[in-house]
Length: 274
Image (spheres, rainbow, N blue to C red):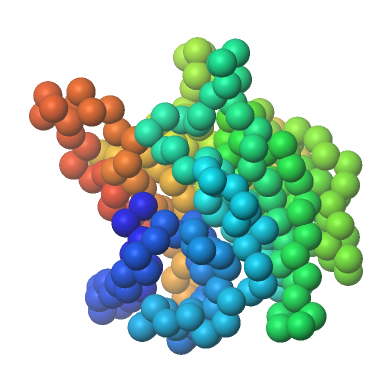
């Protein structure tokens, strides 16, 4: 929300930041110097040290929308960038219509190629909050989260064309009026065994699911921070799960009463080497 792009070195524990002066959705590294950044003004290749844009990736397909911004995104196994949008409001779980249902005014896009050959394709519309997206190890299944649906959907994925089809529910998360509720599904990542790790907004945890069976396998608590936003594997052996959290969206009454979440907005590391 503050528009800062961070670069953290786990060995030296140095955390550098560049102020981009606009809301940031997702970042994908290109190399040690460059990254692709989805920000309010559009998607661009930027220098991660200086914040200077190197190349803008085409016109912003959401530029005509007054209320939308970019949210989560990733590159598929072939290198295409997939990035989705959401409403700018973040103080509530989502913006709702008069009937109390979420407003499906966002979308999911795919960026392919560069320069004059850049192609931007809308893959899904009628989205509320475009969030976690991953591909399985075989590269033939795409998983996607639209947060208010409380589920992870699976699609057949054609790596050669980037086409998605045969949408179905792979994981159904417990509703917020049930005892099993563990938060709203936000960003996610996928492990080498194709199990999915989902960050849970308002849930203080990351949950691990088997998308083939829909089974909840494990719940990892994130201390002192309820708004868990995303996660990704890192480390030389890719056995360290880095978890991002937010301080935005925390109940103002709790802050006023001194019941603040002391770790809200912190970056966590979960050691899964065992």
